[in-house]
Image 1: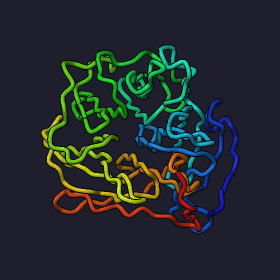
Image 2: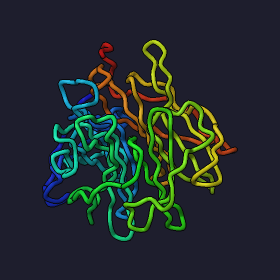
Image 3: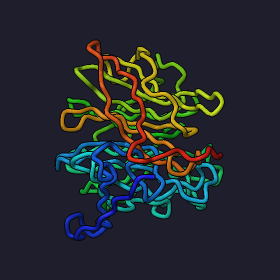
Image 4: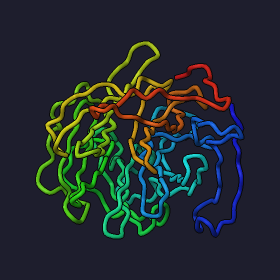
Length: 328
């Protein structure tokens, strides 16, 4: 493995909850991109956003050892950077213990998302409300006036089917859209101004090919892109990342292809964001552990062709990082 490149900085620079751990995880003394870029804990499902303070923030789920599938996932963390090299761990922002309506046994805090609107950060997370977790999923909402601390659970979005992986996209006109899904179905719909209720009905996103989960929506040059993981399962190769495009945030969508082949992990879950003029693809792998359910978040540059199609992203492992033997 590459060096951890761990440094400490004064707490006041990043607030009381910040942990103020400054990770030069992208540099490793050699200046090259290092993946995974967080190595002191296991992370997955990176949701990347750029806020008005000029920093890029990644909201990630947390795999907990010893691994036992995805049921132990808990305790969301936030990481940020201003140069894509040096990363700050702002610490834990939410756990199942802080969800009043949540599953009493805890765990099952899966892929989250976060958006900013009218002075408030809205953190969306899937979590079951009952012991029978697969039939009791809710999309919870926590809010804060800060991007990486102070989140309080406000409730959940009512009248949704029990599915996972929320993504919230705010269009140029300020209208917010919710996407979520799983098990082959992706749904989308408008959110009301309170950001906690659906305005009208959710509808199936038509035109997607082999959708599995992990919906993510971004916009470029007036075109909407919906990216997601598929159902590919062949030998040791698993989820690929696909995408579709539309002239409308709710489709219908036109399938465009695969933009990332499988990593060494059974799953993949990505986000796409532009930062300081460069587009990036975030995803996860199992490079640190060699285990499907102890994952780590990664990032690579993403490029578009002249026709707007996405060039295939080739995941990198640099600065001495190496894959361990595959375990499940």
